[in-house]
Amino acid sequence: MTKPRTKLSRTAIIECALQVVRLYGLEALTMRRVAAELNSGAMSLYRHVADRDDLLVGMMDHVADTIQPPDIQPHDREEIVQIMMTIHRAFRNDPWLVHVLLFEGRGSLNILPLLDRLYAAMARLGCTPAEAIDYYSLLFHYAYGESLSFETKERRKAAQKAWTPSEFEGFPATANVMNTAKTWAYDEFERNIRRIVDAI
Amino acid sequence: MTKPRTKLSRTAIIECALQVVRLYGLEALTMRRVAAELNSGAMSLYRHVADRDDLLVGMMDHVADTIQPPDIQPHDREEIVQIMMTIHRAFRNDPWLVHVLLFEGRGSLNILPLLDRLYAAMARLGCTPAEAIDYYSLLFHYAYGESLSFETKERRKAAQKAWTPSEFEGFPATANVMNTAKTWAYDEFERNIRRIVDAI
DNA sequence: ACCTGAACACCGTTCAAGT
DNA sequence: ACCTGAACACCGTTCAAGT
Image 1 (cartoon, each protein chain N blue to C red):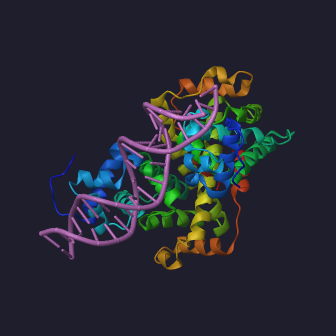
Image 2 (image 1 turned 135 degrees about the horizontal axis):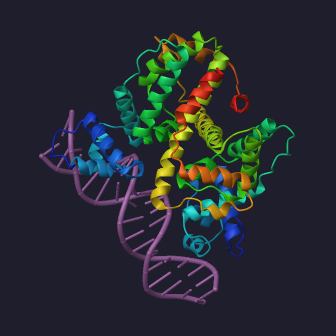
Image 3 (image 1 turned 45 degrees about the vertical axis):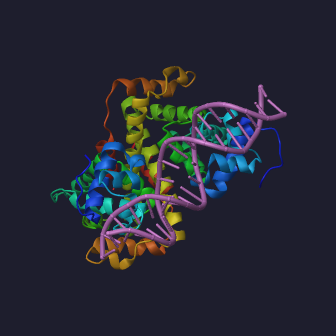
């Protein structure tokens, strides 16, 4: 994927970095690597990008721009579910987003339209602002944790580091649940989002 | 806090590393640093610890051992709430735990007794194993996300990188919620755990 | 104006050598 | 057996120098 020599630019750097992170993961995203892919010196990037954090924020804004907002739903509960599913899909496609959100501590303003639809739907359902904060916390933090955990689970599967049944000896309630978990490809995110929304 | 020269041992290394991570954070926890605190060469640690990941797992096991399990509750819903609050308190005290859990992909077996009480309470409430998996996902992933987000929020406050109100112009539902958020020290974790448990 | 190589101050870890 | 310093292969980033 090394590109032929072209003019360096912020968007060219961001798009190249996006390719690297999607193919090789966040820890492979180094300034030197991106520069190499662009056939240029590592230091040339700093003309267009303040530092690595700035690059990450740029990538996040770029991705946020390409998110397809879901159709407006006539039912407010379904509106909330569809917005959360859209965000969850973005996290599945780009797990590094959650890392940047949580560790850089900086979200993209480009998702504000989606966020405002969420809060508006909550308001129509009768939520006070205080309740809206609670539900936002529950919905988003669950989405963060679930996405990070999913990513880890994939990695662990590849590394064969899963827990073995013998470790659950003496813990019958746990063993009972784990036996089911093993034989069943579950995808609980949507079900759980609906449980939360039903409680609003 | 630099210790006088004593015999190196796995537990001495783990306890020293625990001090470092609690005082200076996970990114300050380097092999060289821990060694320096112990007045020894960085490479000496490798006699007692396989690598940095092994050290982190050792620290996690050590912390898991010191968790005070809550009293057994007569009501199963309250049993679940108290277990989750116990885990949440551990995450607040040691935010790096969540990083290790999610990025090393390795939990401590030492919390299995607590986990088994959780699954047993769910079973008594009539949960099938499939439902138990769903609720486990919701409870724990929310706890992960909330803890990471709390840590980030603290850091961001220190760095004065919070969002400014002007950024919410044109998004009235969001602005309305954010105005409340600013003036109100909220602690929504327990409320949200109870909401989840009520839905079981 | 735009790009760059050498250099700095860090990592985790390997390896051969000390006692 | 236990410890260690030098060295390796990496980082992000600064700085002075090239065109």
